[in-house]
Image (tube, rainbow, N blue to C red; front, side, top):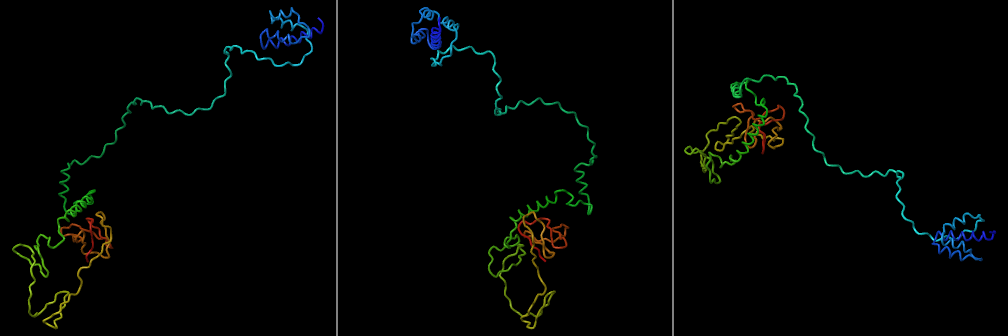
Length: 312
C-alpha cells in the first residue's frame, strides 16, 4: 500500500469515527461514499458493515499520518442509562446557621416533698405571770384610792376610746337638745307675742309667756352695788350706769374636724364653749375638760366637731 492509499484510509478513518459517535453503521457508509475519488475497497466496506469495531482497530494499527484539519462537531449521541448511586459518602458540608430558639416546654411535675427537719432547741422559760385572775386584778384596781389610782393615760387606747364615746354622745345629743328657748323642757311658750316676758309658774313648774305690766311712781332711793353708779340729780328719773366689763369672746384658732383638740387663744379663757356647751377647765367633781399650756394653747379632752370659742 502506497502513501496515497494510506492518506485515503486516514480520511476514511476520520469520517468513520465521526459517524460512529453520531449514528449507526448505515450513516457511516453514507459518509464514506461522499469522499472518494477512487473506488473504496469492497473488502473494507464489508468489514465495516459486519464488524464496525474491527474497522476501528484496523485504522488505529495503520501508520499515523499528519494531523488534518479539525472536522465539524458530530451529532450528540443518545443519553445513556442512569448509573448506580455511589456508595462512597461525599465530604462533610459547612456548618449551617443556628436555628431560632424553640418554645419553652411545659413545667414538670413537682418533686416529692423532702423530709421534715429536726426540731430546734427549746427557748428559755419566760417570767412567771401574775397568779391573780382577771377578776382579781380588776378588783384590786378598783380598790385603789386617790393618788394610787391609775391615770387614764396609763391604759393604752383608753383616752381615744373615751374621746370616741364623748364625740358619739355629743353628735347624738344634738338631735335631742333644742337650741331654741321654746324647745327647753321647762319652758311653755307655744304662741309668744311681741312685748311678752317670761314669768315662772310654780304650779306647772315651767316658765310661761306673760304680758309685761306697766306701773308708775317715784323712786325714793337707789342703792348702787359693785360696778354700779347712780345719778339721782332728778330723783324721779335716776340714771343708773354700770362700770366694768361683762364677757369677752376669744376666737379659737385651729382645725375643727372632730379629731384636732388643740386650739390657740390670745389669752387664757375662763370658759371654753365647744359644740354649744360651756366648759370650765375642771369641774367640781374633778373632771378635766381642757388644759392650758401656760402660753397660748388649750387642749380639749373631747375634740369639737362644729364650733369652739373662748370666754374671758
